[in-house]
Image (cartoon, rainbow, N blue to C red; front, top):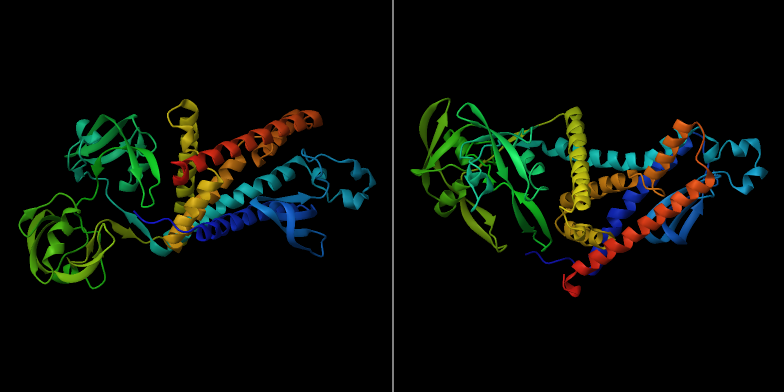
Length: 459
């Protein structure tokens, strides 16, 4: 288990995640407001007492405030919780009144409100797209190469060599798609369509419920199909690969190493690592023919389960094929990944309301801070990926139709479009007070949840 980062690192990482994401969110509101000619009186990162700030030539007060759990843009004339005209509006000139938020048509107000969550969503898409563009997309066949002990799939009748085509009617393109249809559904019975020797079979499988822990001891209850999907197919080569030099090719299916038959790519390291400096016969199936190739085993290094670096044998092959993607494809994959993440959030909330998942799994600012520090300690790639997940969380939460959040305002504007007049000020005020009370109660609950999960409180 990896040691948790220190308190100062955790606080720094938390601010490094939340600060830019709040800034991006509020800039979305601000920039679209400016586009429609709305004056911003204040732009704040954080709530409460101002710690530092300045006023620009447009009269906007830019400030950093004491409580770093959010931010806001205060538009001209937006002095009431409902964004309706205040008493001071009567003293405004026609030019000044034209720059107020509530003077704009409902579609412009809706776009200004929607811009915050959409900016967070687009940031998440941009991060995912950048990773796809820089590293490509790893495609791994959804072919079953082995089973875990007590495998739910094996009990359900699946066999080694079956290729998973769909789960509950949703198409499976590769091994990584399987988790999206299993991890969030412990105990659920799913229909698994497989290709077996050219025939399509559909089998019901009841997913196992398993508690997993990461390197920092964080636990989560997940659904487990109980399959290994690493068929021994050469998907690529590492560096100056001895296997490539010896004549192995992309797409070769390795059927034996040193005379030992294998069914999973995971079997290869077990047979190669203890034999550095020797040569090994690798038997492959290529274009329907079986051939054996002598491959020298070179010496490299690997980190074992205890974190110790050891010298091991290697032949320089990897599973899964690396698919390079262009800019447009990277953006499309970024959107696809972002919507999958948002879909998992919807699934989690529905499961909490239906009782399929405990409310104790909800996390708040303390948990975000804890995870921020942990991901920061793992390197910039893990940290930026985590920031993308928090960004889409902010987008999703703010789009919920709860009065007081962006989604609540959008619901008001939708009602205004249908009724062709705004809801009554008193009705809006009561709705917003109720919504704010609900949000505050939820914040208190998840914070208590977070604290209860800390080791100091026995979590």
